[in-house]
Amino acid sequence: MKKKVVLAYSGGLDTSVCIPLLKEHYDFDHVITVIVDVGQPKEEIKNAMEKAQMISDKNYTIDANTEFVEDYIFPLIKANGNYEGYVLGTAIARPLIAKKVMEVAYAEGAEAVAHGCTGKGNDQLRFEAVFRSSDLMVLAPMRDMNLTREWEIQYALEHNIPVTVTKEKPWSVDENIWSRSIEGGHLEDPGFIAPEEIFEWTRTPEKGPDPEIIKIGFVDGVPVSLNDTRMDGVSLITELNRIGGMHGVGRTDMIEDRVLGIKARENYEHPAATILLNAHMDLERLVLTRRELSFKVKVDEEWSEMAYMGLVDEPLYNDLNAFIDTTQQRMEGIVKLRLYKGSAVVVARESPYALYSADLASFDESSIDQKDAEGVAKYHGFQGRLYQRQNLR
Image (cartoon, rainbow, N blue to C red; front, side, top):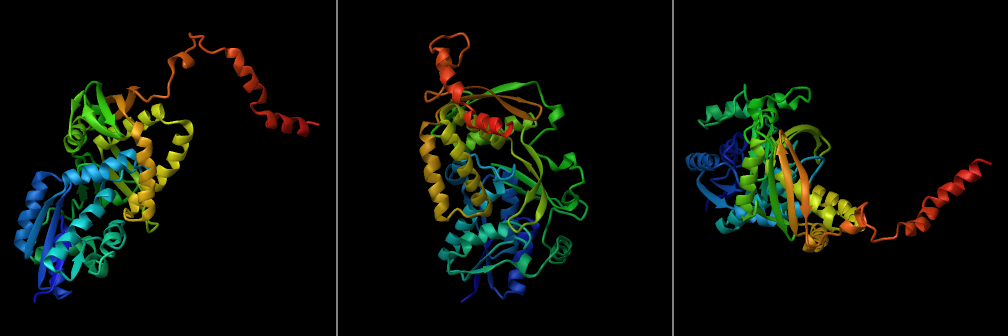
């Protein structure tokens, strides 16, 4: 019987080089590739399929867009998913891709699963947190062989593997419906100004059109409508990426702390994510109590760190989701945002569950007797005043 290995395949340089390496250096007879569509450009999926058919023994292409949005991105929105300013686009997709690869491996009777991650980044951990829950062998040629990008380009040329990166433009791009990440080459220098050519989703903010106000509808903490039109999650996020990108919304250039402790310079584009997270957090401030908000900040931070690490099968991850889901039962309403030259600012919000009383908050209403607050004022800061008196003696 042929020895089979199933490879998480993107069509990029790293995973393409892995195919011959798995045969030459690991003695596998049959390399099966799995392309998981989580919102990559259609042309990218098409090119990856064509390349896989050329250089692999068998290929599976799996459409996971709806599952990705409903089972991964929607929980992220509820949790205000954000790691050090990063909206977790690549991170949240990796466990889903890994699970699809394992499903194929079991169906094919494979001995091993493989990925094209290096030993310096986070993705190796995200894939393997899922892979290592199985009895399958886990292989990582890039990491095992300590390969460099320049070596891979030369190896690909020698093996007639078509690649899109060059030594002059060695950008490594990872894209799904939630975000687009760009790294590599001169971008690894924190002092290098990212050239406009690396951006595809977002227009230069200074060249954005006139301000535009949009309206997002939420039910149970997830977006369900745009400008009063009911939409499924995939369509809504896709349209917000288009609208937000036109206004230059959703660019991030940051120094990120990877799981291994390495600091890395990362560039991201994520218009829809910026808009939806801004809107959702604002709606929470209207609906949740002060104590709920205070505690949820801690829960969201823990959730985001676990998602960043790919630990979505940990019991604590499920526990955090249980709390978050409870808070989202009242997260219904409308949020309006103004998009303009790179910004997405909330300008209005409403909810049937709002903990807001115009009568109580207004300076022009007398529904409460202001004199009642005097008793509170007398004891507000009481211990601090006692301390000051003691130390002034």
